[in-house]
Image (cartoon, rainbow, N blue to C red; front, side, top):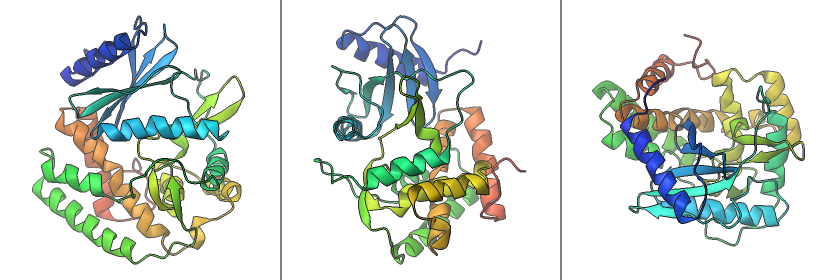
Length: 298
């Protein structure tokens, strides 16, 4: 068994401390997933803990939005009843969520389910909170500026490419209009609620206000991971609009390509060798060109 890295061990201690503050049993606590956000299972409390880095206000907002969405009848993942966000050092926050046990083997999320949920989300009234305006590549540019794992040529290429894409983005017309966004919508953020048999949409950390097309583009960018034309057809039919008919899709898809690098850069900076390998692979694919080439087809 691989020993946890120091950052993982510290994060686990933060979760234990926050859980005890809320009176939650941490017996059997274990890391489920760590990428942009560390996710832990508290089996004795039947709860999930998410460790958010950056602005704690985003974690608080994710909980507020999820409560409001469930009040609207929207199938969002729900915060753990009676819990609240616990802030640590003004840079990290721990939130607690209802645990939705997934079947074994896990069910493959259907893009059509996400299309239906996004159509429903985009038809809701504005939420009763002030949402940040979506700023494409803002977090990536900040990460690039401080990263130590990037070679000089890669750093320059990323900076120049991001700048050119932002110029293109500023010139786009958005036929679907502006409003409340999930902010990181893709099928991987769906969880099956085995009690109801329906999908729930989770991970509200990046919820924001902006062009609706941003919530759709991520699924189309999934061709990098092997998403099929048939899956994209089902997604478009379920949402009621096919982004492939819009001239701005290549720009949003390329922005998403770059956005996905941010978490790998941050993990590589912390000494994660797997993330560093994946980062090199994705940079190679991007710098070789080919907007629909899969990440792992090299």
